[in-house]
Image (cartoon, rainbow, N blue to C red; front, side):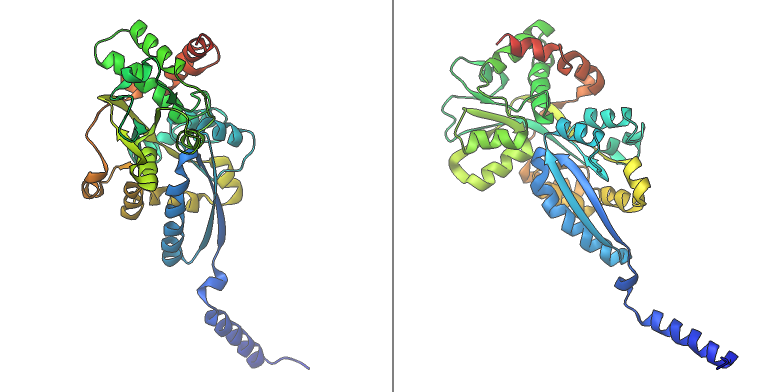
Amino acid sequence: MTTTPLSSLRRVLLGLALAAALPVSANAKDVELLNVSYDVARELYKDINPAFVAEYKKKTGENVTIKQSHAASSKQARAVADGLEASVVTMNQANDIDFLAEKGLVAKDWAKKFPNDAAPYYSTMVFLVRKGNPKGIHDWADLAKPGVQVVIPNPKTAGNGRYTYLAAWGSVLKKGGNEAQARDLVKRIFKNVPILDAGGRAATTTFTQRQIGDALVTFENEVNLVRKEFGDNFEVVYPTVSVLAESPVAVVDKVVDRKGIRKEATDYLNFLYSETGQTIGAQHFLRVRNEAVMKKFAGNYKPITLFTVQDVFGGWQKAQKVHFDDGGEFDKIYQSK
């Protein structure tokens, strides 16, 4: 039978009507992102991810699934370099993202892609001690006293171990001491370290569950979450001076471009700067960039004098080369303990 022009028109109109009747979700794009992050950020992204997914669905109609990978920061960077297909990386030090930039996976100017040098949150290094602080630990020098055991993750693999090392070293210089005195303090502190866990969460487990050590040194947000969970078993001690520990983020260009998900990955990291993202960060005891949110959660933080890696060590690349590369200061200090 020959189809009349009128019949053809009716078919076209019917097809258009059916297409219009389909729900938006049927035509929505489904996207999966992998966020490769550092060891103690698990709880943060457990709250961040569903908040972003819900908001993004409402805004765009897209269904986004976010998967997480957590381990020691530097270990994670190496895993991405070795082929772990991260859409984004959310680390605890710029050095690990610089490493990925050198490998051609992340833009050389990654720190300019987002506000605040691409670090939506920051923290610092403080001490968690046993209830009553029986060893009288109040400042960095107290961690070096004979008979004190200090739990610190390995600076060769963990960002918070690296920050701890630099915080102790820098505390001497900021108080007018010299490099030799700083080296001596750090050497004596690491002499008191009974075990070097690979990552921050393992170090937390060693201190809280295995009951090893008199003090745990790690991020402010981590020790406050531990105290919140375990109540009066522990106390948080703030040293007189510590290092500013930023949590930088970046899109993994080669992965997102190949998969066609750059927009979603970028929007995900921008969400960390939104009022919702900043509020969730503050609820997890991270110091945030939004001044209004920071003021609202002021009770979560204690004033402390902070210095930056740039100010005291000339930046992360120089600090890495001098202190943490094979044969550097840390190797010399730890091998002689």
